[in-house]
Image (tube, rainbow, N blue to C red):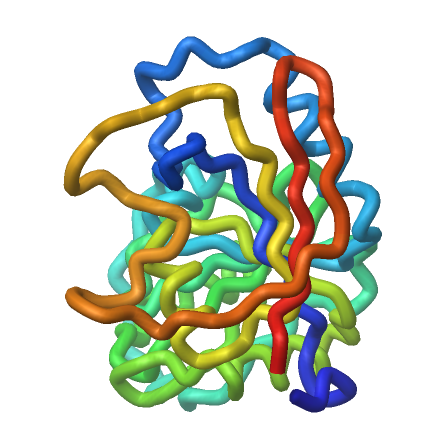
Length: 230
């Protein structure tokens, strides 16, 4: 797949040995987060992307005020800034995140919406200085979203960091180029909790991988890197 028109996508995650990704209840080493951030930094990515539920703790809680009467807001992309050193991207089709700020630790926020969101919400994002892109009328076209991220913000490398449904959507549309997993020294054993990839019921969109490297990290973590074969 031509990655000159979209970012190179690396799915970077910390699953248990049985592929689960909900870490609450795990007796995990304190070094896990440090190792996760350290390995992520080696990719020198300009941006990271996660789903709405995963982004909620970062977005914070705010109120979307009712908009005073005025002209309807056109469903065109809004770019608040293009010169950020890095970007934090949320997939939020229905526009539910109530941002307190336009940045997360100095990373400029970009939210990806569908055209079904309200004018009140768009006005709220503009007032907050949050950039937004439209990914479709009712559903997100992930390929189109990635092309916009490359064109509008110059993002060449993107870290995909969950949750399971978002990762599964990228897998199903064949938009993952590389898989980077830090295997946590935990056997989860849960049934029905999110896994590394949750694409659909029944047979999934299986992809064949080529092993790039294996490395033992602190805290009994194992770092595996794979290239997606095409």
